[in-house]
Image 1 (tube, helix red, strand yellow):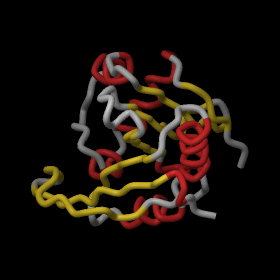
Image 2 (tube, helix red, strand yellow):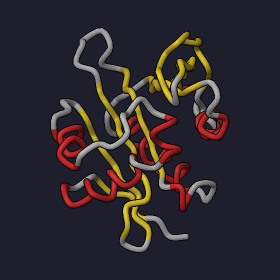
Image 3 (cartoon, helix red, strand yellow):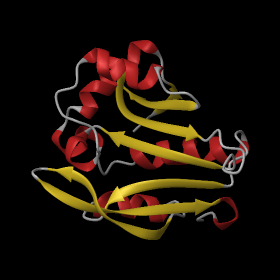
Image 4 (cartoon, helix red, strand yellow):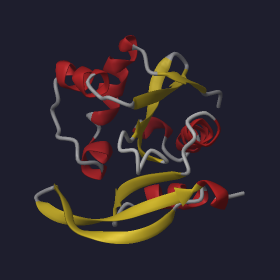
Length: 166
């Protein structure tokens, strides 16, 4: 499967919205369902210190990866990431291609020493992806988010640049 990775463009917002409307993404993130195109667009345009990548397959957006760098001088070495892929390509390597591109961006171009993320504790597929790319569980956050009518815990995970996975 050939995947193109590039920076998010305004024309990608509709495709990204379609990914974030999918049940597995709504349940696995803290995003609300039924977002308007304007809400989705403002999420990407209104973020300061945000770099967004998309995965393109056959001309369609099939994945999104975000890097949020931090302004605080004492945390400038840290970035927070997010990722989502279309259900049609889950388990086909798209998330890994996006992770590799995002990590390469952080390691080699943004001078980031640590990448952080949060993941719901029951999201085994995502945790496998993160561990494959060198992330480790650093702690558990109780009642981190509300989803599907109940509270869920989340792990905070981190990847230190010098501890890259092979």
